[in-house]
Length: 350
Image 1 (cartoon, helix red, strand yellow):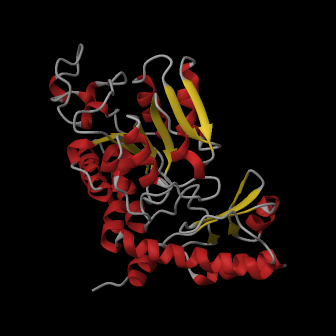
Image 2 (cartoon, rainbow, N blue to C red):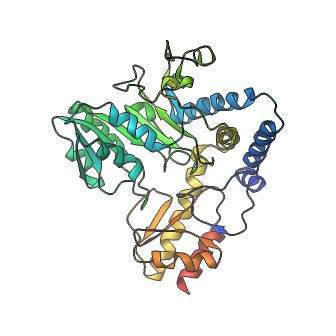
Image 3 (cartoon, rainbow, N blue to C red):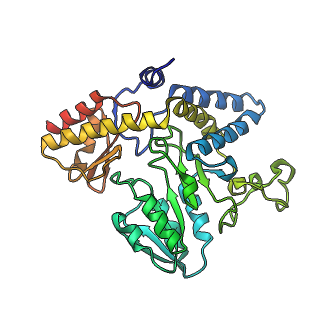
């Protein structure tokens, strides 16, 4: 039986110290091979049926990861697209509650409407900011800027008590944090971070009755029989969340299928334990150097105020991190090791 270590070492061969999964993940070897096979299939003029099958396999894998029936999962391309779909479902004047300085793709579509009452509150006080008349609460499960984790159970209860719907972006959580997408009205995740995929794949989870969503973006893939209704208006939308699909980026899903298979082989619990152990090692090392990161317990994302300016220098030294709002952001995933943490700490101490 393969171990965590053997699985990971067989798939990843980084040429530097890569601590930037919160921006985008390294690709497993099997994913690179799948992408190559997909490109060759297209280049050689062979039928693309296997690539469409990859989309359905990814939909099913994400459904297992998110803990919902596959019929509740739509496949698309971006968080912003699905935020726009949720925003379009709201009546004029609706009260929308968001977290301060959340990621733009979660926020901007609600502001762009121009006729919604969008307000924000600190992440730690978001549940308390839900009030009578709130129509929707939109928040990232883990904050992109600094890794802080939302108190989703408290938020869910507050929303329920006031009759509000919930929209949760799991992009910085799915792949290391257990996801309970069925506990919220709408959930979204892109695939190129902790899910180890490439850009161009995203998932939306919806209630069994689809909530208030109207498939205003529906194209030919949203039909119950896509190939039989791809001319003229779609006469019958898919009976599942596939009605909220967009035409898939087939290469992206071909690669993602391999990545999700690897994640399922390893298991989210094992990934989480590994990632958090490295993040805690980094936090302890920072304390020894006299630095205090943004408090984000239980997160593999560590953000250090004032050190973002060092990102170019670290990159030249072969250590990849991010500069976010002046903070140095390091993020740890399954392909990282204690040696990676120590190399970053050594660079910071120097």
